[in-house]
Image (cartoon, rainbow, N blue to C red; front, side):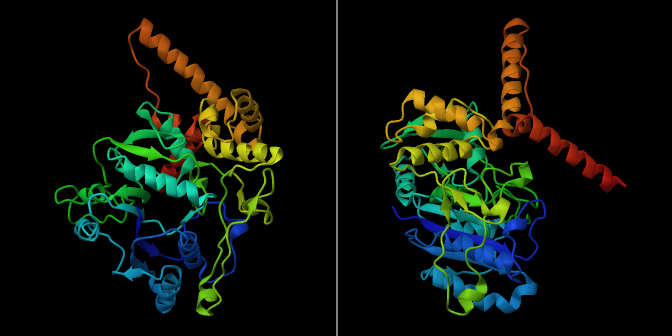
Amino acid sequence: MRPHLLISVFVTPHGLNKFRIERVLNDSQTFRVDRFLTACMSMRTIDWQTVRIFLTIDSSWSQFESNIKAALLKIFPIAQFLGDRLERRSDWFKATSFYSQDDLILLQANDDHAFVCQDENYFNDYLSLFSSDHKLLLAGVTHFPEMQVLASRKRVTKTVGKNSPHFVTEVNYAIGTTLVKGSFLNSWWAAGKIMDETKIVRPDNPFGESVSFPYTKMLIPKFELFRHMDGYGHILMHRPLSPLRNLVSLEEFSLSTSSNSEWKLGRWPARLVAYSGEGCDLHQTRNRMTKIDCVTSDIALLQSYWALRLMPGQAQHALQNRNLRTRVYSIFVGVLTALTPPIIRNVPDWAALGVIQFVQVVFKKVFRHEIELPDNVIYLGFSRALVLQLKKMKNQRIEKK
C-alpha cells in the first residue's frame, strides 16, 4: 500500500539553541528553510499516494514564500498546499477526515526530521508489515535509540514479520513525526478529546495539552528510518547519531539548479561531518558482503541501538538475519561496540540499573514492596537524568531571580 504524506509545519529562522550543530552550520540566510527542504528532499524517492502540505512561513521570510512552495513542488510534483500550519483541534479533524480507515499516513509535524534509511527495500517492507497487521495502528519512524529503550520496557510483545522479528510496544501518546493509520489519526481530534481553544501544533504539543489515547500497540523499526537533523543534544546524546548537514538550499532551487545530493555514507569509524567538519554524514549500517564491512556495519548498527542505553540482550535481535550471524559473532561484535567511546559512557548506567533491578526483586520478595524508578532514569540512564535535572533546577533558580 502506498503511503500518504501529511506535512504541517511552521518554518522559522529561530531554531532551538541547545543542539550542537556548529560544524553543519553555514552562512545561508535561509539555513532553517534549507533544513526543511533537505528533510523533504530526503523523502522524494518514497512513492507517495498524496502529499498534502499545511505550511506557515515566518513573517521575516514572507518574501521567500513563493520560492519555497515552488521548491516543494519540484520535490513533490503531486503536492497540494492547503493552508497554514494546523493549530486547532477542529482544523486537524477536518484535515485528517480526508483519509480512509486503513490508509497509511506519515505525519510530518516537524520541519527537520529527515529520511536516513539506508535500504529503501526495508522501508517498503516495514510499511507492508504495518499495513498487513490490523492490530497495529501506530509505527515509530524517528528517534531510533529512544524507540529501542521503549522496546526494552515492560509493555512489549514480539511480532513476526515476513523475514525477521520486530518489536511491538504499547504507548498512550504520539510524537510529531510518526506513521499512523487513517482512522486512528482522525480519532485523536474528535470533538471533546481536546478543548477547541487549545493551540495544538503536533501530537506532542509544546503549547499545552497533547494527544493521548488508551495504550495502543506500536511497531518499532529494526533500522533507523528518520533522524532529527539537529541531533539529540537535548537529551545529552551527542554521539553516535550526529546532526546532519543541509543537502540543498533555497537558492539552488530558485536558480533551477536543485541538487541531487544524498547523504554520504562512511565505514565506521570514519569521521563524521557534524564533529570534525569533514568525513561522512552517516556510518554505514547496511549489510555488506566483505568480512570487514560486515563487522564495521554491525558495530555502527549496534551503536545506534545502544546510543542511549547499553542493552546487551538486543544484540542478537539487531543482528538477526544479517547473513545468518551466530551467537558467538553477536557477542564478539557486542563487546567491541560496548568498548567504543559513544557506548562505553553508558556502561556505568547499565551496571547501576542492574544493581537497582536486583534490589527491586529483593524488596518485592522480602518486604512485598516495589521500588519504582523515575521514568527519566530508566529512559535516559542515571547520569543523563541527573545532569538534566540539575540543569532544570539551575534554570528554575535563575527564573525566580
